[in-house]
Length: 337
Image (cartoon, rainbow, N blue to C red):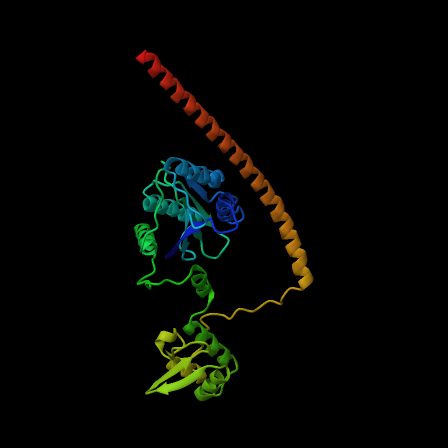
């Protein structure tokens, strides 16, 4: 299953084009999130200097077309593509991200794909230059682009045997909201945990168990022959039947209370460790920060050196091109004489 979201990257007020593009590239290319850069792939550019190359393409576009916009100008596009935990390897996710970017941009735009593995779910950050490879056109975001991104991502997932989100809502949830819900237990999971805790108190009978559930904040009601439960914070009720999970139907719980059956909790509750002391956190944070500063400084220095080399190369290429054009003009003039 993959979820996707497309976001145009604007220059914004109070920052330069260079700062705007380098900020996002630096974030997605973070070595600590991409296995020291092993999970970064560039297309039509060197992933180590993508920000400088995107910026150079933008300036060449302005030079060729004369079109200039202000702070609302789009310099790149960013797609986040998240996969279901345990369903895909980092290398495979990166490959699918590259395939997606090539197909969506038709191979006309330089891009980088950075696969992050710092979360429980593997996810791609795909960033492509708004300017095409010929520096004469820009990618135009269109009405329904979010749906088009999702459909292409789903198609690629199906082609590679991965699951997709069935019947997605027209207005999808934000990325952060979706990630947050992945960590939350479902309503039935929460009810099963509450039943497990109630059984641990060894209630005398079924009515005593329902009373314990009520004391925990669970709403208990009966409709016909069905017992209906609703955990705190949930709007809908869930029946105490087979759909609640094996071993949690009313008949099975009654059998457990009567001593006719052994109950096995479906999911053990997590024991919260003792919170660390503030001083311990401060010490650990200082240590991590020092290590991060050292690693990032080396990474930043390498990027700056590569950016300078790229700029120098572009300048040399431009001068050589001008010299060739001048030689051609001289030959034409000589021929006309």
